[in-house]
Length: 290
Image (cartoon, rainbow, N blue to C red; front, side, top):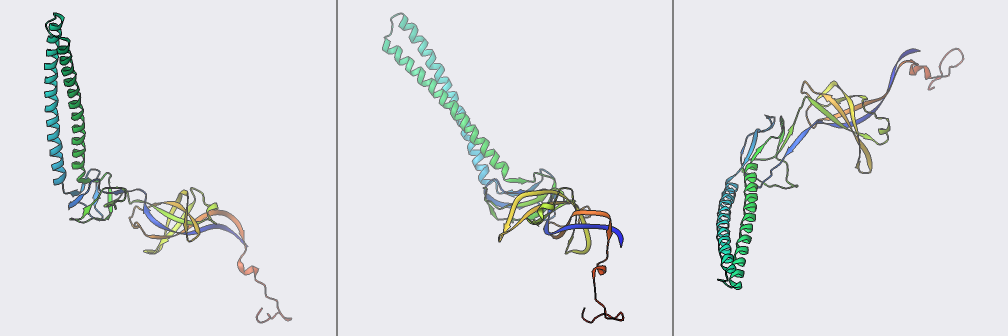
């Protein structure tokens, strides 16, 4: 009998992933004319990583700008016409007050003035609409230049020069950028039978096939409540935080995980051999097969 440490652990299989990654798609539809980032490229926020053919969007932008100029000219004309109708109305009122024109002529002048005022308001609304169209055209033209929104490293590129990309919610991602590969996480699938013993902060070890003789260490950072159901087997995602300063761990590697759920030091331990019993014959000889 001797004293020692014992522990209980839960085993699971998981996948190594970046802690934070950003998926980048296209916000306008068009043909890729150039790529400025590839697998493993280190990028900074704002760096250009791809370009979409801007010719169609430049044309739309020019048309929108010309339309805005035209609507502003129409507004200026409507304003001048309103001023003229106002002068005519004032003159007609003066003449009417001296009984030099009829009520009908005054009504005609008033109607003309009100019509000119309405035309000015329509022209003002058209300017706002034209400005909105120009703003949209400028934004679409800007979106033909695809930039990285974050500092990071490109871990996936799913586009080629000449490929037509489309905007929308179902559009495949063009690039996947990880913010920092020196900090990784393991998403371990823990059985529902074992999840009750898992707590945040527990220590874990794991190995990967690329380094079979190396034991990596991590801590339980999060226990996600969303169940993962595959063929009626329920598991839960337990996230381990892992240091990867030496960059040996790669995204997508399979990890064989062991999470320590209980640990006790200074425990009296009895060797397993002490629990084996073999009856002996008279004279101290063991019975064969016993």
